[in-house]
Image 1 (cartoon, rainbow, N blue to C red):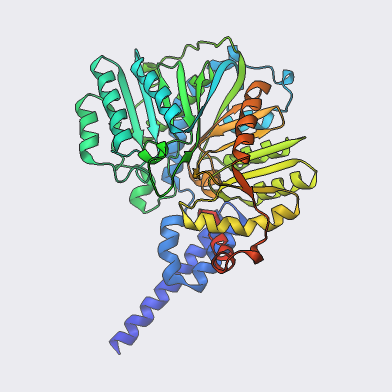
Image 2: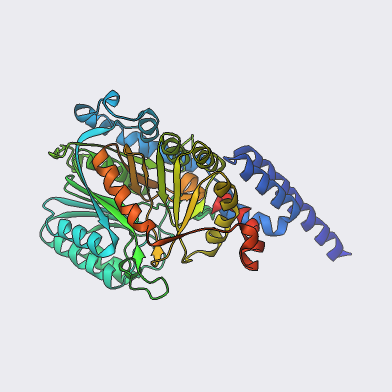
Length: 471
């Protein structure tokens, strides 16, 4: 009798908790699809769904929201520094209002940008900048490995610290969870300000691992900045035989836009440590004679309007002739999915470049559930054949180009902290278009629908798509 009473009580408690969680999901989920998915899952399989909801289901909570808001407030004094270099929006060929609203900053002129294609070129340029640092270095990586590339970075940072350069370094607790203590201790012993990736504020102790800092940022002396798709690990040099050659893109920035990137770093540092570093950094822009208009859009789960999704939506809907996108993962929300279909129906040259090689099976499978509708609307899906493609970039007509860290998936749109560098000039747009055109020549266009794929994809792709809100 005791066991019957106990099991009945446990069952009742489980269903009660599932019901409360379902109410929470219906109230707080950012999309109707996400709300429906969680409610059905929680009520149909509470034993499985409750632990999953504890980890993946919460998009925001009060303490986290308050702390992020405090970090944003801490950097407000520096948000107006670009006014002297602000671009006259009416002089540009595209309506920039949505991009500036998303970024919370003005487009600034006086910038230079260089595309860095693949790991060898990227890290050669970053290491040269670190070796020439005079005052300080800011670094932020999602993944940092203590392999050969990671050790090269470590030695250069220690050498910089030994010559009096101040270094602030942070990594993500999920992406860099395997980083060795010896690696971290060597940096700290050299006087480098490093946040231990094993120590994370807010979500981690609540078993909520949604809030990942996916940014990749290097800033030297406030004059030179880098962002893009490359983390620190041998695979990014194409040295992992499982993935083969690694196709990725980074950018080197100079000019006032570097200070926008620096502002994002300072906010993240304040969030993680409550240490204000604004007054320790250089905020005097050094304009480039190339005088290009640019903007840094930093997005994250603290945004109230889904800024990551809105950035891509704004770029796609601005297209008059073409929109080319490259991403390693393709699990879009309904807004971006609809924008792509609409662009295809308008006769725009829409191409989406994705990898053929698999690194994460669930997103790879889920993407197949979107392709049929897109292809029917005239969107071309191209699968990169030359190894693993990890770049996150796009070009719209000859007017907008974007390179950064945000993938075409819900995790980047709403759950991760991301950075996109945006450019509004023909020179940069042309270079990105030429780069993507070369990638297209190394890709194969998807020519068959889901019904003609192998049995594994046919069966599992629709099921994987159900997890779209957290992929």
